[in-house]
Image (cartoon, rainbow, N blue to C red; front, side, top):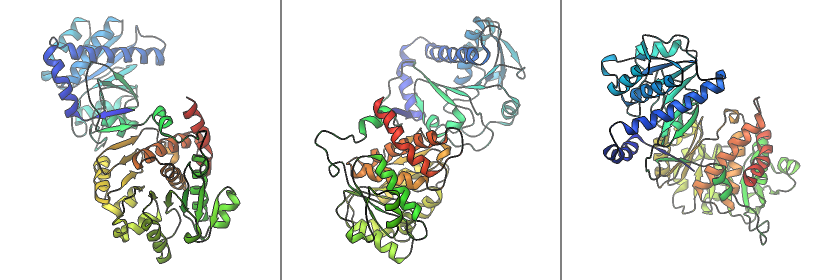
Length: 468
């Protein structure tokens, strides 16, 4: 499991080290790690280190000092290092002195570097790049290694308001920060350097494959199709039978337990999934441990009645698509529920439920979870899962290939099946999001894909995750 920390927590963890270590020792640890990553990047991209060219973009804060000390270390390895001082009068004095002693040169603009180090601003920086820095960054065509965080990207929210660095690699000093999870396209590959910080749980966390493997329901010697969890699916209809097929199919593929379908797409579901137990009406569905409701079910009075009947059963339930539209129109539907509820809106659905998402997606999801007393999975380029108690999990396996019609129906079925198996709502949503993202990447394999292929890839992804 990875934890992502806010700037205040990082500074608090640095304070005892700064007080106990010799002056500048902590910065030199960070700089050594930065130089090591830069050297490895040079070797991988150009075939060597000595004789290569590196440009440093140096701001006025400690990140500028990190870059200068790293530049000095690279210079001692035979790299031609130049530094662009964006605030010459406020450059880190000790770092600049070390850089010059090592033979580094101060220039006004990068000159055909093989690699660029972004040391413009650190974790205290806010807003986009200033015009001078923005012009220099815009002219760069070499890969950029960001020191701690990419400059111009909000460290807390990952938001970009204007000119900002897009790094190929980001070297995180001592701790992962929220931006590393929330702005992967700006951070590139993230390398964590240990500088001795002691930190507790982060403001955000993400699951890795080992976490998913530990949580995913696996049949035991005494299990049967009922003990592994029975999911009821209410989805699809005359207009969108495919939604029912996708939600039911992904649930069947996610675990070995039973899936019951209740709705007017019964024939389509049975044609695709003869394993499902299907009925036309909710009252004939039979007993279930959880419900997955919403994809393609419609938003008319009959659909609203079906949704109300499901929620009145007070079983763990995931709501998606049309169910969210109905919930926005009838927010009282959740009143009195004690069983877990998972809401899975995209930005438009979220706006109807709780207002515009805004720049801080984590804060928006966390507030909506409190308001509805439900786990909220906010879909997007990075999926954010927030629990009513304030815990947040960010999905770092998300894939842009998942942005295809019906993909959300697949995710709904997986979440529902995990709820039926007994997982808590936060774990069910977070595990499902990771497996869904991995399945989308596998189905695409670098080319456009579709929801049926994402669903079909789920067992192979699980096989790899559980074996490893």
